[in-house]
Every structure is written in C-alpha cells, then in structure tokens.
Length: 149
Image (cartoon, rainbow, N blue to C red; front, side):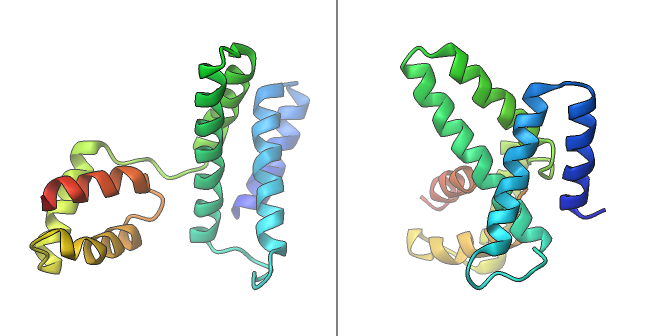
C-alpha cells in the first residue's frame, strides 16, 4: 500500500482512538508529503526514495527542535517533539546499528578502492545510494571519516 494511503488510514484510526500525539505526527507526515508533491519539478507520485527523504527530514527537524527545547528547559514542548518523532520513525525503514554500518562501509571502501580522505566523496556517494533511509547521513559521514583516517 502506498505511504499516502497508509497515512490516511492511520489518521482515521488515530482520530477514532483519540490518540493526539499519533495524530499530530501523522498530520505532519501528510502535510510534508503534500508539499513535496506540489514542489517545482515534482511528479504527481512520489517515489519511495523521495518519501523516505521527506520522512528523514521530518525526523531531523524534530530532533533539532527537541534539543533546543531541552536546552531551554521546555519539557512540555520537548515531549511533543519526541512523540511526533517516534510516530514518524515508524514509517521509516529499520535503521542499521553502528556496527552493521561500520562493516558495510568497510566493504564499500574496499569495493570503491578508496585509500585516503581524498576518496571520501566516492565512498559517501556509494554508501548513501545503497543505504537510502537505512542510516543517518551524519553517522555515515562520521564512520567514513573514521575508517579512512
């Protein structure tokens, strides 16, 4: 079932069960998908890869907001961001552990023939393309730097 249909169905379910936190997260996803569809140069139907990027962007926004709220000791707003982030993450592919990611990156370095930090772009491109949505870009970057150093 396409993500948009799944979200619509889950919104109805959250409304019936009066689950406010889940409903906020689902509405955020629906809004972001609609915006992505209406952006310039976007097609009517989003690819799965584009949907994953939208969801990752939403999670990243929630994380950054939650950190700011935590620093400002706004636990009420911090909690809201965490709840929404948890809802959004349920629609993302299962994330790889740091150990699995490190092993995958070592293999990618071997396959690409990378030898130094100069080859980081080559490795990053390969890994990001193959692991779309399964790992955070920041974590990938840290591990590639660590393994190429």
